[in-house]
Length: 209
Image (cartoon, rainbow, N blue to C red):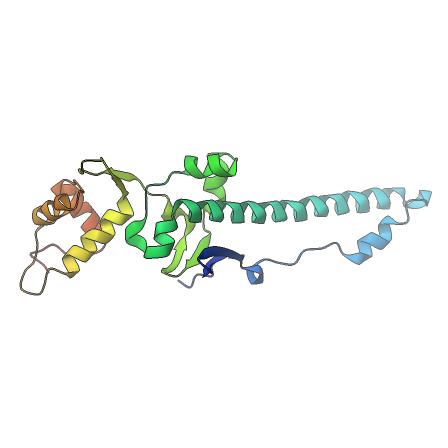
């Protein structure tokens, strides 16, 4: 499926710049013909027409403002995501941290339902590829390090993929062995959880690899 990003993120002078994809946003305005009709309010025989025209113009203005507010909120949400996930945008998917709708809702000062609705089906173009905004919301996994560090589920999956890619042609690591390697990296996952993430990555078992 071909995806057109709604927002693009570019790095400039060490800072991230957000660019709204204006090409995908329709240019909305009031038809001049209706503006002309609305000027005839003084004619009694056109009272019904004027009421209809003025109501239509007000509805159109409200709709245009709603679209503008939605786009403004989308940019604010993307900016908040970039701030929370700066390591991802600087270093890649492995550095995605746990993030919830509540975190962004609190930062942007809107409801969680609004965040869920505005991120649904919206995409952002980054240096590491184009992602749906919902990708950046990931469950946390408790680390086993001395500081009790936490990483995201997506980050754990990237690390599992790296471990499997580095295993070599003659050495196929079992899910249990991958779990042991993860624990040395401060990530404690059960064997069945490793197997679940591996399947989500569309990677075969060690026997089939």
